[in-house]
Length: 239
Image (cartoon, rainbow, N blue to C red; front, side, top):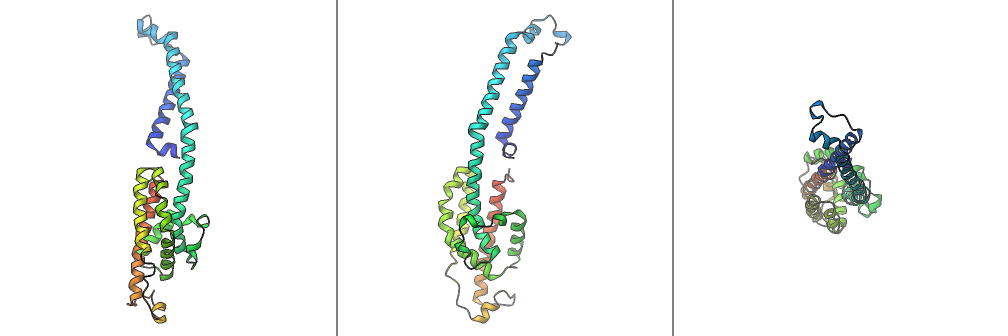
């Protein structure tokens, strides 16, 4: 829950609960301890002036916090969630093209991208496969084509990341750089024979196409690593 994850919001919530508890104590009017009976301090503590002043102040603070939640916090959280949905869909578009391995995956509307590829288990499994180069050529190629198509979308979305936080903006700049590097492979595929294309996923292949595939594997691995970092940041796992 956002109100508990964010240190500032957690502090305000705990402070408000503490103030409400203190208000209940004031209104209950517990009897004074014996040592304070018939003393000036005791008279002040049980006096109507102190109770009225303290109660009014605490009620005002609690009311201010309530209106803060209603007018600022809740609308801001809803706005940030919609912003994250757009940014996550952009990241997922490149991942989805790899996952579903569709030749026209780069033409998929951003609203129809499968965002389940942002799940932690899927990202970590793909990261492992990419590090061990246990991937096929076509999924890498289709994800690269999507990165090339979406590069300008990633750049224009920087303002959305800025609206979330400076940390999100910095992470998004890194993501843009990784998408740019990945998309630079577009149109660079070497000419290969049918036999080289057929054997490109074989560990014994030494063709230029195999080297090209390794480059795509590296660039996509870097993108997946940044997708994991983005997910951790926006879900609060980085503190």
